[in-house]
Image (cartoon, rainbow, N blue to C red; front, side, top):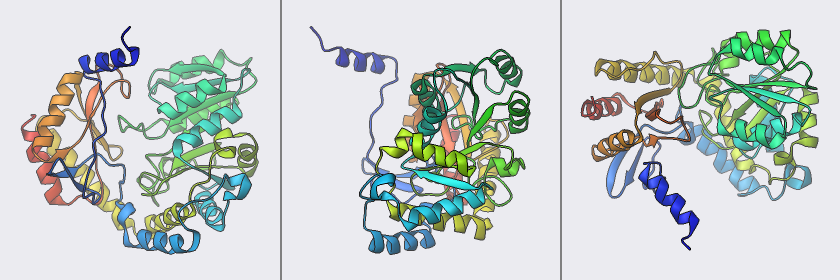
Length: 383
């Protein structure tokens, strides 16, 4: 009898859906090498280049000497430090909330929120393009799960209207959709949440640091900080560190401390990463030139690609998808760009729907005009 796991892998290869790990060497943020070839990276979520910012690195080095490498235990055992509390205070401040709670990863934060607040008598209603962590959290919660077509809030309202017998209705969205880069209609979702007495959870992972007058995210940009019940975010994108967080009223974070299993049973985020993230948040507020540089770069890339004939909607975030449709075509495009020193892996099903394979370009403030010129020159071969 043949090993079914090998058959599954073979099937993936035949469908151009097989994935493998690529070891990047000499990694310097926007540059690295792979297979002996020098590469320019347009695929990182380090939107402001803060993972290598001198202030952030210095803060991490100082914390490393004080706290060491790891946290040693879960937060409720001995893993909570002054570094965690200081970061949570800063996160609550930038999100305009009473309280914040740090998790070991953004994925864990989303699992923790939905499994803590939803159960068999509840219903979770979410946008079809929500991140896998939200989908998995909803499934693990055992609540009813209803999905509405992407940004189709008329359908969302129909579901809410028909679910008023549920104990609790939880409305879920990303603020910036991670594969398409477009923004959710938060004002409409707030209207629906208030009309149907739902709990509104927003994942601002790709908005924090990038959008808003002070870089505090999409919720700030839309002026809705006081209207959202739970704001989730990550420390691993524009903040340049690692970890996840929840910002909300104090009663909500207290509830998570007591009922969120990914918080209770996971080892705490290392304090060194907390200190790096806190300093990065300070940099975001104190050095707005980084955000301006990012948006200048985003518009430069967008102008260049549309000038080459690629159909890309006006940018709403640092994510610019070039949708190619066919998985084989997307892989071929990746290889062609790779041969010219540009690294943008092909994104395929199940990360995106079938037939929506793409090159997902992400832009950073750390990219130079020369980097962008190289990107556009390479894309000329695809045009």
